[in-house]
Length: 249
Image 1 (tube, rainbow, N blue to C red):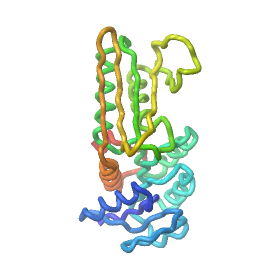
Image 2 (image 1 turned 135 degrees about the vertical axis):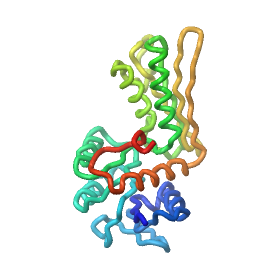
Image 3 (image 1 turned 90 degrees about the vertical axis):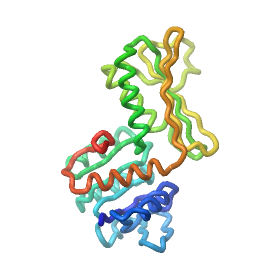
Image 4 (image 1 turned 45 degrees about the vertical axis):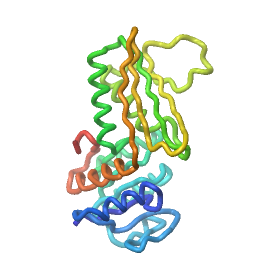
């Protein structure tokens, strides 16, 4: 039985992860970490990592970028593998995540959905076929409570396209202040926030007299929770390194 700690257990995603784990027989929630201190009946919740009494086999993080330093310090000190599913990290913080993976197993991705990762692979294939003949735009939609923009997933998709193209593209997030025609070497990334949209991502390839659109819609947060739990079980027992959905798939 794999014992899992949930960082951000009192948040929306933390609760969904707990619900997913409770329906499985190969793992259980050992404890939670959340600054709210709200308690569960089935496991203890700590406000600080230093308060954890028993070490988990793996930790799943769906919290906030501000928790990163304390979380990495705990996992590095105790040798605990970690699944990092929080978004909104700075480049400096991503550097810390990659550095930590030199000592412990770290599963890090901007999106835990199998469908989104398939979308990234399809986008790479489209780039191979279409070359530089089509303009590329990415539109992402999320609920009105999401703080970061653009979404980490939109950046992940743009990065996948850019790497496949030899890193020739620049990302453009705002065109209203620049009155000039669109550059060929740019990917426009646009954010929409409203209602209770769980997550929608569309990649638009616009060419001469034709448009190709690749789209993914998440209708429930469960798709991300299931992915994170599968990732947690996957990295248990793995050597130190940086893992993502490609290895899991």
